[in-house]
Image (cartoon, rainbow, N blue to C red; front, side, top):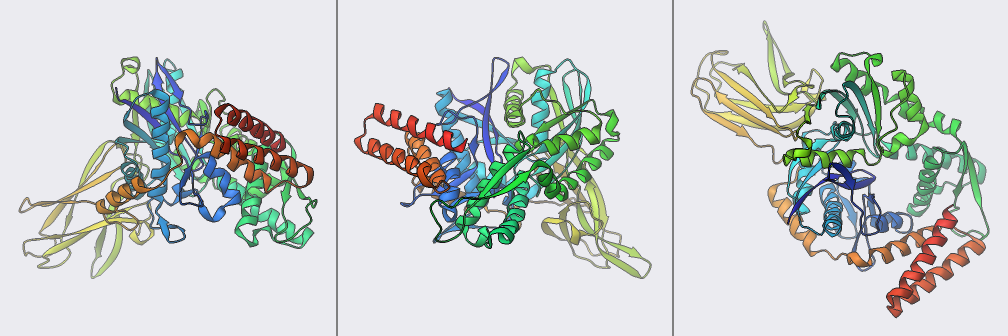
Length: 571
C-alpha cells in the first residue's frame, strides 16, 4: 500500500513527517536520527554521500562537499567537482531521494506522493526549481506549501478550538519568512507574508567566521581562510560556537594554523554572547523590515498579535527570541519544536489534501508573497514612459486567485504586443524579477488605443503562475508557459538529470551508519591534537579492521565505541 509524506526541504537540514492517528510524527532516517543534513559529498571513487556522512566531510573534503544549495534554487549557478557539475535542483534531488528512501524504510510502504515546503518568500522561479528537483528525485508532488503556513498548521493541530491571531517568524538556515495569520474555529487564514530569501542562520555563522579570522590575523599572524580546509575548520568551529552560545555566556573558538604546525599547538579565540550580539546586529536589523511589512499588509499593530511562534533552527539563538519579545511585547511560544514544526505541518497538509476525516474541521488558506504584473508604457501628452510595472495580482491576494487586466495598443497599426511578466514591488520593471515574455501576434491594424488585449494571471496554491492573453476583438487566446526563464531547467534537462541521478553510485543504505561514523570521526580527528588525537586514531583503526572482518556484532561494538569517543571529545 502506497502512502503520502510531508517533506521540509531545508537549507541546513531536512525532515520527513507523516500523520498517524491524529498526530504528526517525524520519521527517522537510516541513522535513527530525525534530521537529515542537506549536504552532498562525492567520495574518492565517485560514490555519492548524502546527509550526515556528507555533512561530516565538509571539514575533511570541502572541495568535494556541497551545502546551502537551496539558496541558489531558481538560478543558473553550477557546483563543480572535477569534470562533473551539479545544478542546485540536482543536489536538492539527491537529498529528496534519500528522504524518500528513508521514509519508505521507516513505513514499510512505497511513497506515492509528497507535500514539500518552500519559504514563503520563494518566487516563481524558485518554486518551479523545487518542483523540478522533486521530479528528478522521482517524487510525485502536487502541492508546495509555504513554510510559515506549515508551521501554522502544526500549531493549529494542537489548538483547534482556539481563536487567535499569530505571527510566525521562520528563520532557517538560509531564509527568513514572517507570516501573520488568524485561527478561527479551525480555519487558518494567512493574512500577510513577507521575508528575506537571503537571510538565515548560515549568515550568522559567516559573520563569526569573518570577525574571528580578522582576530586571528591580529593575534596569531595568519588568516585561517587562506585555503578551503582552513576555512572549513573555522566554519565548523563557529557553527558550534553559535549553537553553544544559545546556552552558555562564553565559549572558546579553536583556530588551526595553515601549513606545518606543532602537534601540541592549541590556538583559541574567546567569544561571549555580547560580542556575538554586536557582530550580528546588522543581520538582526534585517529582520525588522519584513516583520513591519507583514504587520502593515495584515493591517494590525504588534500588540494585536496573541502569540508569536518561532520556527527554524536559527530561532534557538537567544538574540532572535529577545528581538521577537521586544517587537511584540510578549515572549514567543515554546510549545512546538522550531526544528520540526514545518515538517509536522507538511504532514498535516498531506492529510488535509487526502481528505483525512481526523482533520475535517481544519482549513488553511494562503496568500501571494509577491506582486505579479507586466511591463507597460504610459503616455503623458507627447511624452511616453517605458518600463512601468503594472501589477495584476498584488501581494497578499488570497490563493488560488485569477485576475485580468486590459491593455491597449501604444502605436498606430501595431500588429503585435510583447507581454513581459515580472514579480516584485518596485514601480519600474528593471528593479523587479523578470519571469518570462511572450509576443502576441495578429493584432488587427487600427489606431493607437483602439485594439486591446486581456491579460489574465492565474496563481495556484503552489505559487505557480499561468498567463493567458486574449485579443479582445478576435477572441484569439495564447498562453505563456514560463519554461526557459533564466535559471530554469527545460523539461529535457529535467529528464536528463533524472536519468543521470539513476546512474550515480550511492553507498548502500545499510552501510550508512558505518560510513557516517567514520566520516564524523575523521572530521573530529583533523581538529584534535596530542593524546586525544592518538586515542581517536586508535579507535578508528579498530573500527576499520572490524569492517574488514565483516562480523556484524564486532562492527556494531566498535562503531558504538568510536561514536562514544567522538561524542566525548566533542563535549
